[in-house]
Image (cartoon, rainbow, N blue to C red; front, side):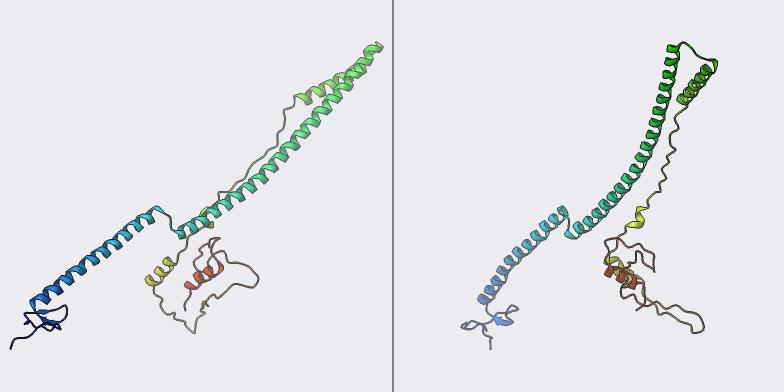
Length: 251
C-alpha cells in the first residue's frame, strides 16, 4: 500500500522523504519545504555581511584610535618624564644660583680693590698738590710717593684671579628608574616555568621564603623586588608590588 503525505490536510501520495520535517511528503510539499529552506539563506547572508562590515570597519577604527589602556599608560609615562624634567630644572636652577653667587662675590671683591686703589691714588694726588703749592719737598717725601705709586701700579697690573669653578656631574641611568610590568608577562612566566617542590634537608641550614602579604606599618615602601632585584616603577601600587614579590615565592 502506498504511503500518504504526512502533511495534515494533504491526501496525495508520498514521493520522497523530507529531512526538513523528517516525514514522507508529496512532491508539492517537498518543493514548498525546499523553497522555505532556500528563503532562509538570504537573511543568513545579510546577517553575515552585517557582522563582517561591523568587524571590518571596527578594526579600521581601532587602528586609527589609541586604546584607552594605552592612553592611561602613556599618561603615566609622560607624567614621570615631566616630573623628572621638573626635578632636573630645580637642581639646575639651584646650582646656577650658587655659581651666580660665587661670581657676584668675586665681582664685589674686584670692585672693592678698584675703589681702594682709586682712593689711594687720590690721596697721593692730594699730597703732590699740596707739596707743589708749598714749593718745598724733601727727598724722603719724594721717595715715599714714588714707592706708593709703584705699589699702586703693581696692584693695577696684577692679572685678575677668577674663581676656579668646576661642575662635577654624573650620568643619570634613567633605565634604573622606570620599567614596564604586565600581567600577561607574569602569567606566561608561570606557564613556562612550573614550580618544583623544594627539598629541605634537616641536617643543613635551610632558608624558607614566606609569602609577602603586606607592607610594614612604618610607612616605608620597597623600591625594588628583593627576589629578582627589579626596580619598581613609581606608578606601581603597593598591592601590585606585593603580587610581584609573591609570584617568586612558593605557595
